Length: 195
Image (cartoon, rainbow, N blue to C red; front, side):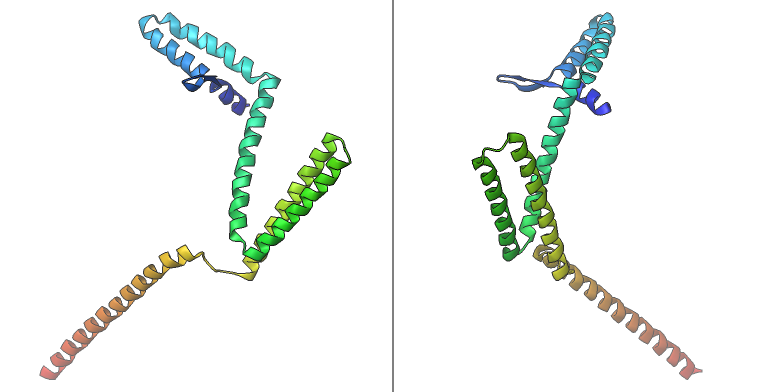
């Protein structure tokens, strides 16, 4: 419910030369500024926002618009994630994935040529996209099983100087400790020889 209230408060309208303007935020700001001149505007602004925002948020049609926008954003993220996973695969696995995508498109073309109902085509399209997604995840899992613990090349380049520095510091610490022990034992030996 908070998602709908937040979306209702930040609802925007396209204004030609200004872009998207959040109407309720602009109205609340205007009432806030006018309230300094006449405090009655604060109460009026509060009443207007208290009436408009919940009325818009509880409207089922507006709720469907908000859900559609969030679904669109999540699909955009899924496409970006899919592209990242595809780049991770080697060329042979990418070819296998593209072959599956080509076969899925051929299946959809067969449905279209048979003039199937649109909802059948849409539901099968979604099922085939899910199949491609599962196949991609299986290919990525296979890649990780075949190449365990291989960091990307950039990470290896970053790790190498750090390892060299760590080894150098460790060796320097050993040399310093060795020299301190040698000096300490040398002094201790001289002190015993003098006695």
